[in-house]
Image (tube, rainbow, N blue to C red; front, side):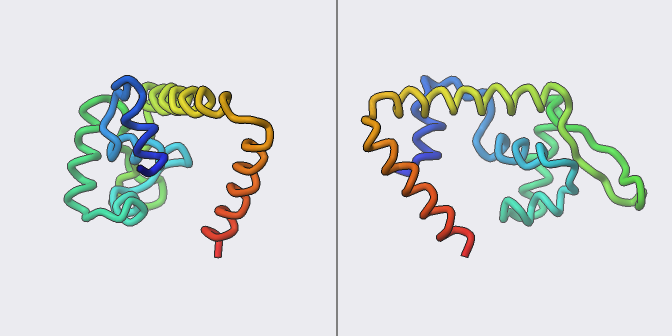
Length: 125
């Protein structure tokens, strides 16, 4: 099972938001994006992203605003509530992983650190 999936589903059912919606929120931590930009990043169709954005707006987690250079464009950004949710969800996931890493020996942790570096190199090629 993929690690990300395991983190999402093996945390006592505490997740406050569906994974695809959380992913959109997490993307917005880097700054405002248009719905089209988010659809491209998340590799989903424009209508799918529109539905996700609508849900997140309705929940008060993101807000729409006109682009400062082109008023025809709508920028999406996190609300304070959305930012807080991303922070708390990441902390929950980090705690889950930390708990599992505590049981590893120093040798096993070193192996994971080296593997992480190697995987990062593979992904960046």
